[in-house]
Length: 121
Image 1 (tube, helix red, strand yellow):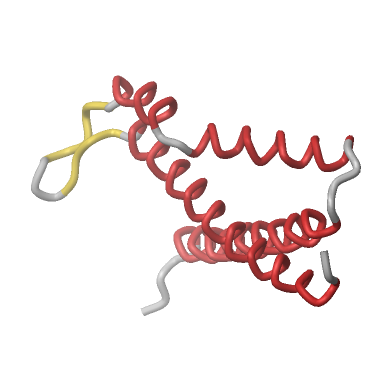
Image 2: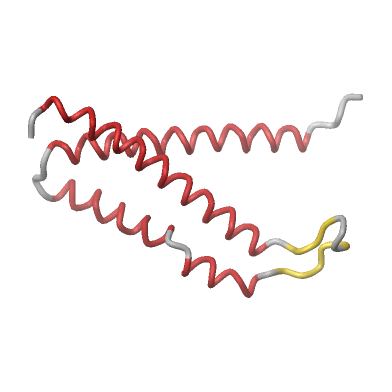
């Protein structure tokens, strides 16, 4: 493979990593929501959990299978001599997933800090 096209694989890895991160974050949000108590302003006080939906969300959503395939691809990459295009792809993938994780952690920290600080009015 010509080395001119290797940055294209980096860009493809960035795009795939962004898609992967959004799928995994959506799956985690579904797991958290299925374990939360139902309720709200118009439903009354929270009193019921939807834990019965947890196995369906955990097993029928494609995120755990995608995580397994990505882990398998990374292990295969490190144990076999493959094309350098895969290395560029995995570097882009890792950069995108790291950026998404750091950004999500900073937003969650800001929300948690906002929730714990008393309102100043």
